Amino acid sequence: MCNRHVLGGGWEERPCGLGRSDSNSNSDSNSNSSSTGGGSGADASDRRGTSTGTGTSSGSGSKGSGKTAGSGSGTGASARTGKCLSAGLRITAQDGTIGGDTDGTVVVTLTNRSGHDCTVAGYAGVDLKANAGSLSAKRTGQQTVSAVLENGESTYFPVSCPLNTSGGSGVRITGLVVTPPDETHSVTLAWPGAASLPVTDGSGSSAKVGPIGSAGQGG
Image (cartoon, rainbow, N blue to C red):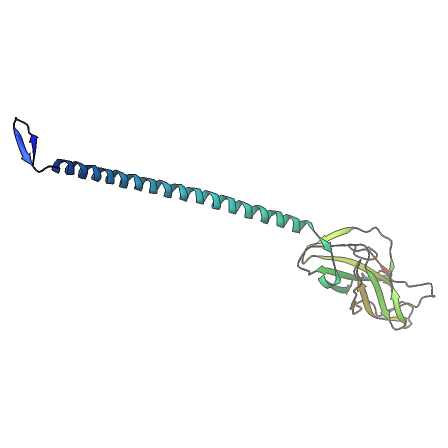
């Protein structure tokens, strides 16, 4: 037993160590409380820090990089335009002769169906298939220009031939062979113009072809 002084004088007997146990219990309780509170605060702080840091890093950095790459790729692709090839063109021909003309005119249309832009310039190769053989059209010598055809867009050029007014059978035309500029693949079309050409004196073909982009008789 231990003596303990109490208020008002006198002494009180009580088991030894009891006061110390209460003190330790209170101390441990306060310590645990502080420790628990501190731990919760630290965990919350860690959670806030981690969430903010991750969101900023992956959100901004990743999206910014994607937009830049996409923009660069689109610009480079649109800047490259290849030549118009036979496989990517729809080629048609129709009679474009105007009444009163001394020459007949066939208008050849080139339509881009490749799915992308392409460039075309110069003269197409033109041969007339006839009962007497093949006749190559001569170039008119007009200046050429380069044009970019968007997908679905068309351009034209003329093929002109003298009309057969002799009264004879002349040279019968059966077809038209067109080879786009800078190409080796040809397309054969039905001849839509006058059925025959006058017989020449052997000085060469009387058919003429204008440059790509011109229309009408000889341009």
